[in-house]
Image (cartoon, rainbow, N blue to C red):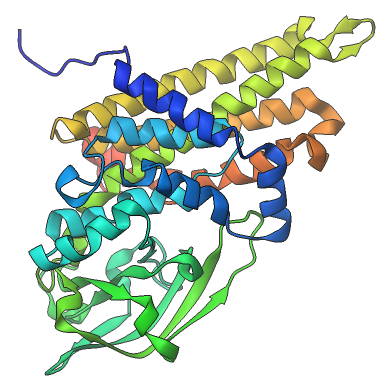
Length: 391
């Protein structure tokens, strides 16, 4: 019989990747990440080490200086970062954002930028999509790129744009045809690859304080002039290019959640075995055991779905359903594991020295970003179950 087959065993190379990333992460202990969080600083040394080791260029083909490996291997990298107690957000965008350039960029763009992204000397970690008024309805973005004789002039706003201050370039989505003039509302948007080192004062970034160290901003774009060769692919096809890359994002974010979930469970199990109250380890109590066991099973189930999605991605098969389900299941599982660990630690869970509260704050984001879990439910209802569109 034919059909898609899932191999539940990792091969030697994948196991070596896991051990290699784990070894690198061991050089950056929990206090390193705690200090980054407290001071609100970018984990510069960690990102540089990951780049130098080649892990952030894992998805870039060998012809452009990358490792030429697949989504499964990339997922392992990000899982291990978060499983170590770290935060992979500073790395995941460098891994997948270049996908739009790789799949739809010009020969010149690929040859010029991909080798530099692969070796870490050029950072493409910012993706400008979300806007204050449009929210999740990307078709309603108002940032507009007006065609000129020499290229485009862009005006507008973007919000929740992370790592802007630490990126050399940004992928920016803008309308090139007004919404009221297109046949389909997803038409008329274009994707631009912009060198931030050349924008001057045309883009003003204002940091947004959040409960986690995510380096996010609101951008004000005023008369930004860019040459025509900044356009990625065809004018008006930007939304399609965006859709082409979201499955990768879903899978990689799910991997970070799985790493978080495993870290939480390891902490909860250790503490439940060590903590003695009423002359017995608290792990003897089913009120402690059962929630940890449920969270563990949820993380394992999410991991299975995520590697199914990654395997289909690597085999060139449609994986929108699996990628969305993996993101949903993994983010819910990591949140459940975090909550269980907070309960297991009791009052110590909110003490900074145990690092639980930091990871608890960090993993909560994934239920909302890069896509709200409610929108994932709507997607599954409409596209998988063929129920009427709800929005």
